[in-house]
Structures are given as C-alpha cells and as structure tokens.
Image (tube, rainbow over all chains, first blue to last red):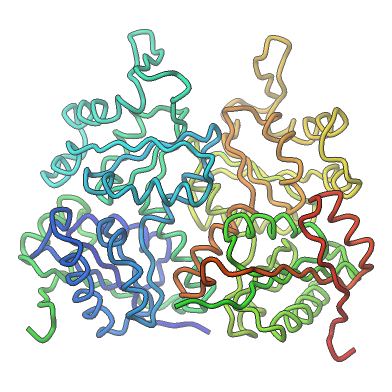
Length: 285
Length: 285
C-alpha cells in the first residue's frame, strides 16, 4: 500500500525550507507543498491568538490541496498552535520541537544539552520542556542567539563575519579556545554541554560554522534533520509512503512577494526550490 | 481527544520488557499489554516463514484485545515481518530498528557508529541499512556480541564477570584503556566510533557496565529508549494519547511457562511486571 499525495510543510517564512530540504533528502520519492506565510512573518512578535489564526488559515489551504501529512516547520506555531491544529484536521501533523528534543535527549552522554534559538523560542521554554519530558535528568541550558537569523536572511552563510558571530553567540554555552587549543570556559566546568540543539529552522544553514565552533566533543543536532527522520517513520507506520520510482513534484507557495521568496531561496538553497507561486489565505479572501 | 485503550507490545521472550519499561517511564498514563512468545523463543534460529507466522499469530491476539498501537519489540520480527504486519492491521505498528538507527545517526559527531547485537541481528544488517537510510555518510561498524544475552538471562547484570565480558565484547569497537588511562586501539584510529547503538533488547540491562566501558567520549544509545520516544510522538500525532490522570493497567501474557516468566521478570526488573497470565496463540488452538 502506498499513497502518492504530497506532504504539506508550513512555516511563517523561508526558514522552514531547511526542513523541506531534509525531507526531500530523506524521502526522495515524496512530493511536497511548502507554504510560507511571508506576508505576515515574523510570527515571533504576534499574539498567541494571531499565531493560531494564521496557522489555521495556512493549514486550511494545505488541507484543501489534499496533503497526506503536515509538518509545522515553525517553532512559534508548533509551541502555540499544535494541539488546536491536530484537533482540526484528520491528517497527521508533526511539529519541529519534539523530534529535535528527543534526538538531543538520546544523544547526550553527560546529560548536559545546550539549546540555541531565537529569543521568542527561548522565552517559550518549549524545548526545555520537551527535553525534560524525554528525560528529566538531562540538564538543559537555553540560550537566545539573536545575531544569527539576520545573518542568514542577509545571505551570509560562511566567512569570517559568520565565524565570529557564531563563536560570540555560542561562548556562554561553549567557552572559547585559547591559543594553545584548550577550552577556556566561563561557567563552572560541570556545566559544560556535550550536545547542542539547533532549535531554529535558520540555523542548519550555518551548520559548518557552528560545528567548527562547537568542536569534536559536542554533538550538533538540528531539528530539521530530526523532524525529517520522524516524518519518515510516521509515514511508514501509517502506511502513507509514496510509491518508489515515481516523479515527485515540489511546489512552494508564499503569501508574500513571489520574487523576493524566490531570490531568498536561491541565495540560501541554490536552484533547489524554484517552483514558487503566490497564494492568498484565507482562500475565501 | 484521547484514547484510553492499551498499547500492545510483542517480543519473542522477555527481552522486550526493556522496551515496556521505557514505554511506562515515558508514557506513565498509558495502559499496556505485553505478549512474550516464550513458548517458541528464540526466534533467531527460526525460518523467515516461521517468524512471520508466529508474529502474525501473536499480533492477532493483541489486535483481538483492542490495542490502539503495537510495538514489535523484537529485532528478528521487526527485520523479517514488519511490512507484512503493517499491511494486516489498521493500528499503527512500530518496530525497534528504525528509532534506534535514527537516534544514532543524529547523535554521531564524527559519523562513526558502532552497532552491537546478537549474531542473527548483525547478519540481517537491518541496523546497518536503517542507519544508511538516515545518512549514507555515516560509517557503521557492526559487531556481534554473543556473550551478553546469556549473562542477562542468567540474571547477571553487574559485577566483575559482567564488566569483563562487556569489555571483551566491546574491545574490537572501542579499544581498551591502558594503565595510564589512555585508549589502546587495535583498529586504525580513524575507525574510532563516537556513538554506540545497543541493538538488542537485552542490552539496556547491562547499560551501567556498557557506559563505563565505552567512556565519556561515546554516546550510548539504546533502541528501547528511542522506540519509546518515537511511540510517544506517534501517539501524539495520531491523537491517541490516553487521558491524563487515569489508572493505567499493565498486563503481561506469555505463551510459555508463567512462573518462569514471572521469576525472570522479577530478577531483571524487580516487582514492576508481575501481572503475568498465560495465553495460547493462535487463539483458536
């Protein structure tokens, strides 16, 4: 049994394309429809009611297009709206918080996990709570890194400026390397993390710099890969995998400016996501 | 929305109780029914046809008892029978291979993962394949450790004999520590793993000795914990979680000798799984 219908992905903007990229890599036979609510992004400054309403309108549009599963690739929407969304639709809906939290809780050897994210995500403590749900004995060190998203959105993914910003952003969690290569660590040494969770969809685009700054002793886990893995398992368990060897289609929709979406996607992902179309939500508007 | 029906777990014997233990820890509001096919264990020496038939008979029994989801907590059955089982039943069915493989592929920093399991599981290359599905760039070092299950089944979970057997079993993957505490490593040093996957349901019972032998630099991941985490997510996504604050019931069924099951469970898990009843499968027999 198989199901050729597309997977729906939803984000407030372009950040969720990192999740789309991992889904396409992990599930190459699957078709996808991505909806970015760029016209109303970012969600981080919106009220909970607005986030719930916008998310519902976007998922209505994906449901109308007969997707077989939905990934809410937006940390804000996952934290605020996921229970309501799951009640509203028959299709299985996956958020980005729990898969990343699970992977981090399983990966840590010393039970000390660092979480970096935007200030809004850190304030929600969604990852802290999800990691504690997995294993209450894991110590979770949350740290907001507001410098990183603006870099990505400016198309700066590597180079000295990026390396410096990443090192500065991680310093409170990681310490920094002295001239002799040893770590100089500003916190009590027993707070040293061994696992770092990238809890913002933009951050995988900086993973080269982050992995280099974290060093070999730290497992760097991103929510995008973890979510794609759980999605693969979810489709298998629910008998929803697409037939092998089909011709998958990938469509990106945006409520914002199509050319701007296309050029940002091109800077960040090359030619991979170029089938961009405008969409109006709610559909009745 | 919630669903108070029990979760079904199936294993050829008592090993899957480690999965049950993690499910109860991770999902304390859920009721469970565990079925051990002890009367026909071990499955490792059975033909594929027998494994499929036995597994189907056991899952028929669980389905008859109206479980809402099933965990196949048996590596042999997962490797051989899972696709057939998923086609046969409407309830979602989870195996133990993929969750562990996913967690290991996400946890490794150096892309070198060791897998220890019984000879039958290693011969199936099920974990090798599942890790490669996750990430083809991860090097997977499989190693059969036949000394360990007999120790567990003899009730030996700690002490010098266990430490020695574990160290011997891991040596080809891990090297051993010299008197000065440094690692002496028999393989080329670039083959040094940083993540070790316990791919046998018995091994979490030896985790203290395994973690000690592996050392701080190696993440030890067990399929039992990883499977419980994916089950939690699966229930949430499919709106199948039990109501909070109910009184969960736990029932263990065995096709073998009830007293023997109870005494083995008591040695391995204390008083946790003491509601053991006999069952005959197929039910019509």
